[in-house]
Length: 222
Image (cartoon, rainbow, N blue to C red):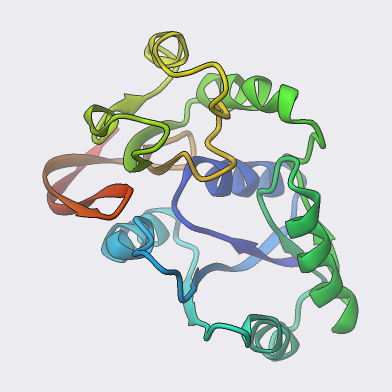
């Protein structure tokens, strides 16, 4: 099956990619969508790292810029231009977003595959443990300051630190950050033959949001 994988560079997108490869899907490309948000996306602000991840994975990445109110048509036109059978996304339980993507896919006669879908916010914690247990190591690159303190920026979330993270954050915060409470960039996982070592970053703030822009990094063979 030929598929395109939505790819922010965050942990859910990487875990979805891992699941897709396990199923034997042929990954035509990774898709990083640039939306017109009221605030900067910490993933798009670190697009240079997403490109590095694409190079390490040896899978091409496409950056697709959308306009507010035209997202559906732009995505439909993009999918129609490719010879694909399905699109892979990393949603966990937000039905509205899954339905939105499903409608787009149905209109261009392709499937929507959601390998992480659990359909229940109470199961988000399980997904987080699955991610870090799989070997995904990630860097917190954005926090909504209404929910998480800025101190978490740059925190390395992995199998060794996940218990500390969950013990210190408010119990009402989604463990995976599914509601936008925090965002991540993966710097290492089993698919990588090189690890991204983050050496320096700048913290930027806008209203109730703070995020990092990585300024210096190196690649280390594993």
